[in-house]
Length: 230
View: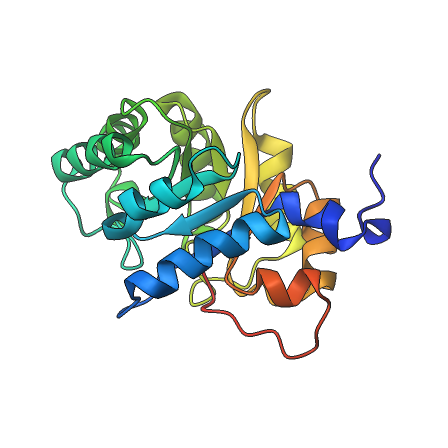
């Protein structure tokens, strides 16, 4: 078992997906963000869909993954057809992974088939899909259904939440998902991750990746880490 607390900055960075999804992000900021992912050895550069093509250009040949998100940060507002079409376009532009929001309202309304197919439409784009389950918004029975349906739909990763506004990622939520994920389905932690200690605790709980906009501060172990809470 890995002792995550003992990892160096360089050893911890590959578990982090470096995130920049904010209103008003510029071309120059996007380029800098992609270059930071390379410099610090992060697993991925997570960017808004509008910046995927540019990020893919900057990261070409570096080995750093181009990741993007859809139906986010406001989750569950897109149509399923819109999500599927956007996912296909993101892949065409160079996205190698997609994080997606789910239809929480459909789940709560008992439309399990619609909830599952909404995810499956994005999975058909052909890249690993990380499904933001918004666990704190669900009852115990809804949590169990969400995990089962997401896995049936082909999710590559289960995520505890979309952002820190929903949940500051906790070891308990990660263990919940790890304990229920079938073989081959991984877990990503997301939401308000600002410190090295949080990352260590989440990885120790079983997360395969963590998403944060405070990656540089975390791996350099500075005390003033700032994050968008994604």
